[in-house]
Image 1 (cartoon, rainbow, N blue to C red):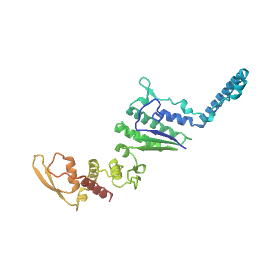
Image 2 (image 1 turned 120 degrees about the vertical axis):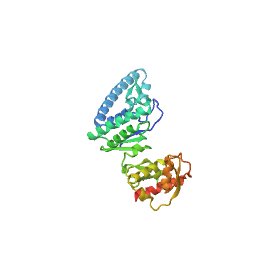
Image 3 (image 1 turned 60 degrees about the vertical axis):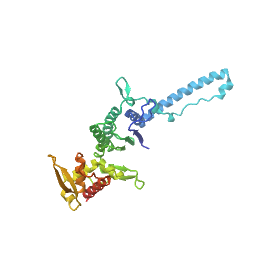
Length: 305
């Protein structure tokens, strides 16, 4: 079985916290898993057990002199060296600063910055070393309390780490900065649909992974941002005229800079686009949520084709 380490998005900070939040605890797990160190620890445990056996034997010998019946009823119980939990010996290992305040007492932002540095160092180490144990890093919402630039740095570090041998990285996210940095084959949609709760993202609507697209595919979530994103892509490709060709038109009252009104006939997508960008113009009937969804779907189909 591989080592498994979980970084939760956030949690209560307690002194008895046994969840992995401090990367030093991961280091302890992996170091103690080294066969050479395991052999050394087994030798230490055997030596300690031998000394304890001697202490118990001497104690019972003296008890035999005082009360043979009690001495014969006692049997020293010593732990099997193979069952010793060496991780407990190092459970308080940590990186501290600011008057010895440990990481699990710091803010989420500081903790995540430490994790960025840890994952970058781990990526370099695991890429250069051999005979490393299998390990799975699981990170919940790595974007928590992080500036977008730090989100991008962390994502790059996780991608590099995932490319090392015997290494797998799993993460959950709601961040478009992280999603756009991944490849399509790295993304799985987890939805509330009973028919297909887990599915892959296909490269069809946009040439890069988009969180807006992911949310629309998974949950049917139609947003102004996604509408703008699709419209902007078609516009950048110089295909707005082609997209609008043959579509039904509707009247739209445009307000000029001098305050006068110009009557236009435009397609639904452009109608929605104008209303999103000019909410101060109240001379038109506002589009409905269903119309927003229909317009998004039309643009998706057009881009895909």
